[in-house]
Image (tube, rainbow, N blue to C red):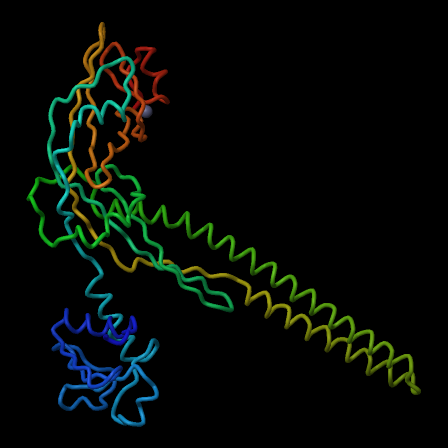
Length: 364
Ligand SMILES: [Zn+2]
């Protein structure tokens, strides 16, 4: 059986395999490594031939004095990790292997979407590539400690809405570099607009996280300042006691006043230090993004009812989730499954219903 390989070791192997480097496992956790052309080593040690000996095991170092220790935080590993991040900063994949001919699409549509009082009929079905983008943000919360977290958010560039099933999108079993079958693109927002939506979403999450951490910091700081106040109150009481017991009253009074002022100053400095440490700084940046083209069906449906002009809706069938997506209301743009058809053939969601029945032209 093969010995277990640490995540860092498997990262090194994969990084070298993908970037054109070479690795040879000399013994468990000890490697001879040739980095890809153009990658410079942060230290010159042992790199005359372009081959570096690395070990993931500190105890192997005495046996391999020329080896560099590879662990998180060492310059070499930091370098490889940041290079890997740079290379993978923006990726693009296609989802393949989806069923684009769902069984009884009309029944599924009629079960999901309701348009009173109309009947839904399929006019046209087109398979198109719908772009969705997963953004990974890194938030760093810095006070007297530093904490970093990675927050992913996925945005559908067609609907302009957040995608809740990012994990499904990222399932490697369905991702390919090239589309199959090749399909025309669906109408979509630009990547920049998608980024703005993702950032707004992330800002909401980060603000909530920062508020929690800020509250904890303030509480901790208040406790520490309380302790500090009690400590200095005790010191002052002690000084008072010393003064009371002193034989030479004048001298004691002068020295007492001096020490009281010094104590006061010390307490203020230490309290200010505590408050400064409890200020929270938040740093947010985009680490990576992946654009995923997914085949979906764009279905034009006709809505007909007696004594009503015919209406239309564009509905999206998602073969990955095997579900009808919520439809953006033609009037207000909000996603919904419940609509009303007006006598003039206008379609609107529940919120837009008053505008429809009054027969006035729609608000824009
Ligand atoms: Zn609406």
